[in-house]
Amino acid sequence: MRYKKFLKSLSLKDATTYYNHSLASQTSFKIGGKAKYFVVVKNQKTLENILSKCKKFFILGGGTNTLLSFKYYNGTIIKLSGNFKRIYVGKNKLTAMAGASLFSVCKIARDNSLCGLEFLYGIPGTVGGAIFGNAGAFEEEVLGHVSRVKVFRNGKIFWTKNFSYSHRDSSFKRDGGVILGAQFSLLHGNKNQIDEKMKLFLERRKQTQPYGAFCAGSVFKRLKVDGQTIFPAKIIDNLGLKGVKIGGAKVSEKHAGFIVNFENASAKDVLRLIKKIKKIVYKTNNLKLEEEIIIFGGKKLAFNRRFSHPHTLQPRKGNNFRKCDFGKEKGP
Image (cartoon, rainbow, N blue to C red; front, top):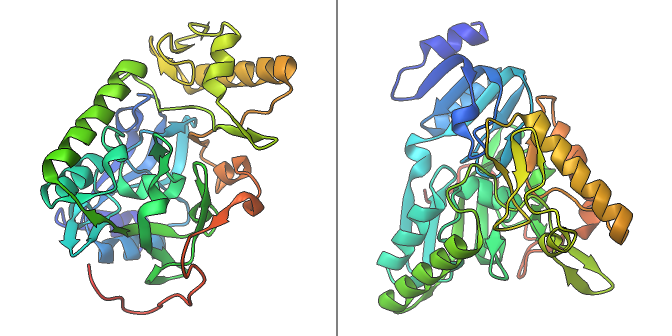
């Protein structure tokens, strides 16, 4: 069966398919070209079938940390929904599928008096995207709280504890797998205190970031130089680059680490502004900035070229190199 015919044969309970679909509305930047196929997948079996048949694909999480820089993608953009939004709670554990929002995860953890993920509250993304990019804030990172991850790789689905990560980076960016879910190891705490901490973090975001603007979070990763942490936003601010514009894109006046789409910006506008910032920072401070956001131009694994060498990654704490449990996994 031809791929397009296969997609048309899928029932609405399994997936919803759009053809030659504009993706601007699917990203927080409100920027994106068209994709030949945009498929909202609702269960694991359907995802397996699609991945076994399509030649080119890109998994789009919440679209909150992604710049889609292509005009037309001759492949399949996949968004996980339906069963992939499920969240399960156990004793000191919370298991969330890849399509679940971080807002939902934090709220359910709070409602079950589980603490440890409060720092994620207010980050507008999904579990899959957060694991992929090791999302974090306030000196904490999501993979520091993950005990195992469910992945689809080489035609098999399994839970793995074998992963490594560093600041806004993970081994999942390089292993060719698709993240399906994650299990978090948490602690029991006071529900009211957890709620207050979540509200505090959200308020700090609103006060210091262009919250609600068309942007994709911090554009650049922080740097480590001679053991010291360097924040790109502070350098960009000190250089007087707040408010600098190219086309419809500009450096946020509220937080210099953000680029906002303030007036129908194109991907080209954002990319030119990123290039300009990197050039000025290198010329004045001899520092090479590296993008934190995912920039996908439509070519197969093109975004991988932007990643740092894997030797910068640190192994997960604990028995990280335990043999992976292949085959039919237990649990959700």
